[in-house]
Image (tube, rainbow, N blue to C red; front, side, top):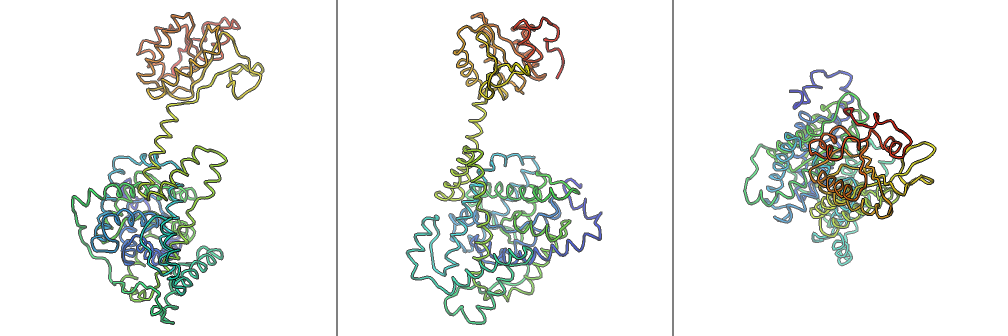
Length: 567
């Protein structure tokens, strides 16, 4: 039971000394979550109250099913953007239909994540490589930031791509409400200053309180400053999401995207925080179950999709969270806010919520990663840039699709064109080394020694044969080819056919074909295919160095060369 209900592991053994840390962290994160939840709900195209709804039941359910004890689940900017983009293409943002689809989306995301967890499919996120995620996140952060300009400047700007938004800002420059801009710009400045002083200070809440006081005290809503207005009170009621087969079909692509991106964001931060703690382990497939349960349960209480957030999780850990009780305390604080404090948010300026979002997301622009990739791996930098540009120009869903496609293409190229080294002898160490990486190696006019650094299978067998031909062409007096197989971990039927063709061709040409350093499972395949008997056991050696010694006449020991051991 503990495997599927991790709460049964920490709750029965709860230590009193953990209570102060959990209480402090729960209250701190809860205070952060109230303004952030409302801000991210606005970003998702929903009324602010739904951000508070998404900050209650999902947190409690994750505490029951999740394996991380510090992960702060709730509304996050990335998922909010995906909701606005995906659902916004199907319904008018903010409409009842839009809200219903966003809640249904939570149920669909939960079902997908729960199913993936139960079927142990967490490995699927490996197709989202780090450069792709970094490129997508950086571009999405820009999109989110620019999408908030209309709230920050107090002007009506239609939804569009980043370049379209910038153009519209210039078009409507004369309509900017400078009071609204002062409030939003001031909010950004205050948050940044307070963060530099101490990250534990609940800067978003302070900005919300100051924004409320300024607008209410000076009556700025009458000067054109847009406010949140009516925020319903009371906890979310239980209700079944509206199920419509046509709508479900239309939402599947965005549901899959949110499921994978949300899990990636969550597992990344959960693992990074877990490294600081030794008393538990983050289990990826159980994390999928925990997030799935949180989203399914949230959907029945009017929540939109949620996942683990970077900033709140860091604060949760720094504030002393030791168990999932901290998340439950955060949820209780939000519930109390829903019951007694929503009336106070009437005069909350939307510019303040925009400032909270903009500070949060611009920290996700990964310039350091781009610089690092420029120095270390230009191919990965290309993946980063392609994903980022595609996301900016085409949209968030299309951008992540391009990123996944680029990842798969890069993987196919890598496995189809493996590294194949030509080896030469280092006279001092008597080791065989790559002739392209080491100087003063002894090479042989009548002997070719090669080492493929990958398993051989249908995708790379043709390249292996082509590369072999290229290397042979440099040795017109070729009499012996030694295949160093120590890096070959597997062979499929296509590779076995390729090796047999090579062996037959060499036999017809009178070239001796020798294989050295064969691993046990690979040798089993050679036996079953008949290739071992075709070549003869005298052409198999324990190591490439031994094969070279015997074939060059330096050693006459014929006993050691046979690979009789089972490895």
